[in-house]
Length: 499
Ligand code: NAD
Image 1: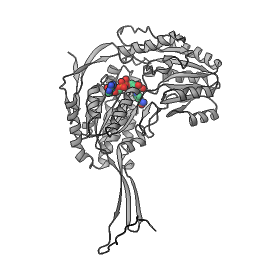
Image 2: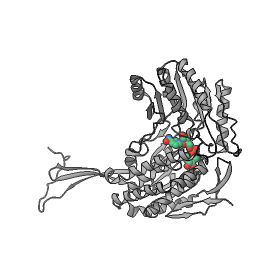
Image 3: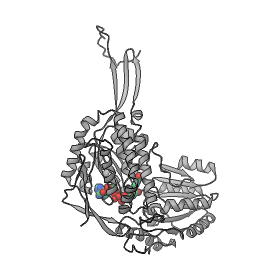
Image 4: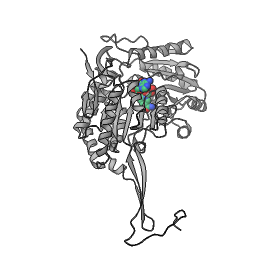
C-alpha cells in the first residue's frame, strides 16, 4: 500500500481524492507513492480559504509578514537533509544538486525578508501648496502559481515568499510528478507563524489548473513549465482578466570562440550540460564552435572527460547526475538522439543504452555528445531536456549569433572567450534574456530577476527579484489635502495645474 500525497488547504492536509496518479522513484523505476489530483471543488475550497485569509493578511504589517519569512528560512535550513532526500526520491536529483536548488530557493526567502524596505512606496510632499501625494503598492488578493517538475523546491520559492510578503494569499499547483518536497516545505510556513489559508497547495493536473485559470477570485498567475503550456496559461489567464507571467522552455547555446580557454570551457560545459541530467531550463544543450579547429579540440576533450561522468541512483552522492523524470521522458530523449543520428549527425558519445547495476529499471540516459548537428535537424530545434550536448560548427561569431537569434527560445546563453570586445558586443546584442560571459549557468541571483526572451517567456515581468514586487502588487497613488478650518477653495472648471 503506497502513501497518498494530499493537498494543503487552510492549514490542513486534505487527502480526499476521486482521482490519483502514481509517483515514481526514477532511480529505481518503482512506484513510490500516489498523489491526489484535485477536482474543481477542491480547488474552490483552496481559493475560498485564501480569499478569507486575505481580509486580515493584507492589513498585517509588512514587518510581521517578513518575520514569518525569517523563521521560514531557518526551518528550511534545519530540514534541508529531509527536503533534499524528498527531492531525490521523486525527481532523482543527487543530494549535492538538490542542496544547490534548495539554497537558491532560500535566497529568494532572504530577499522576501526585505519586504518592509521594498514596499515603502514613494512620497512627495507639497506637489501643490498644502497637497501631498504618495504611491503605494497594494496586494492583488488571491494569486496562483503553477510549477514544473524539475525544481520542486526552488521554482515555487521563486513565487510564494514574495507574493505572501506583499500581502497576497497563495494557491500553488506544483508538478504532480514530484509533489512531496513542495508540500513538505509549504507545511513549514505554518510552523513559521503563517496564518492558515494564506498559503495553500493543490496537487493536480489540467482540471486543477483550469479551475484556477477560470476563477474570477484568482487575480494573477505565475507559471513555469514547457512553452506550449506556458502559452496556454498566458492566453487563458489574460483572456480571463488576470495578470500573468508564464515562463517556458529553452534551448541554451554556448559560443566557444577560437581564443577561448578550451580546458575551462570543457569543464563548464560538462556541468552545465549534464548536471541534473540536463533537466534544467538553463542547461547548456548546444555548444556553437567558431571554426573547425576549436570544434575538433572541443570534441576531443569533451569525449575524453565524459568517460569520467558518473550517473546513477540519487542515494549515491558521488554520482554527477541521476535518472530523468519518467520512462516516457527517457524514451523521448533516446528518440531525439536517434533522430539526430538518422539526420546525419555524428554520435560521439552515446548514452542510449545506459544501465545502472542494481537499478536496471531506473530511467537513465548516459551523457551523450553529438557533433556536426545542423539547425535543420529536429534534435536541434527541440528542447530535449536530457543529458545531451550537441555541437554545431560555424565559421564566424556573427554566424553563431544569428543561429542563437533565430532559435524560437531565448532563455539563457553564454560565450567562452578571452576577448572583452567580443564578449561586450555579444551581451549587448544577443536576443536572449540571461547572458553569461565565461559563466555557463547565468541564473540571476535573488535580488535580480529571472526571465527569458522570445518564446521562453510570455508576459512583461520576470520572475522573483524586483520584478516580483511589481508583479504581486498594484500601484495606487493618493493625493491629499487637509484644508485649514474655514478655508474653502472656489469652484475650478479648468484642469488643475500649479501655475
Ligand atoms: P510542463 O509544462 O509539462 O508542466 C508544468 C506545469 O503545468 C505542471 O504543474 C503541470 O501539471 C501543468 N500542466 C501540464 N500540462 C498541462 C495542461 N495541458 N494544461 C494545464 N496545465 C498543465 O513542464 P514540466 O515537464 O513539468 O517541466 C519542464 C519544462 O519546464 C521544460 O520545458 C523547462 O524548460 C521548463 N522550465 C522553464 C523554466 C524557466 O524559468 N523558463 C524553469 C524550469 C523549467
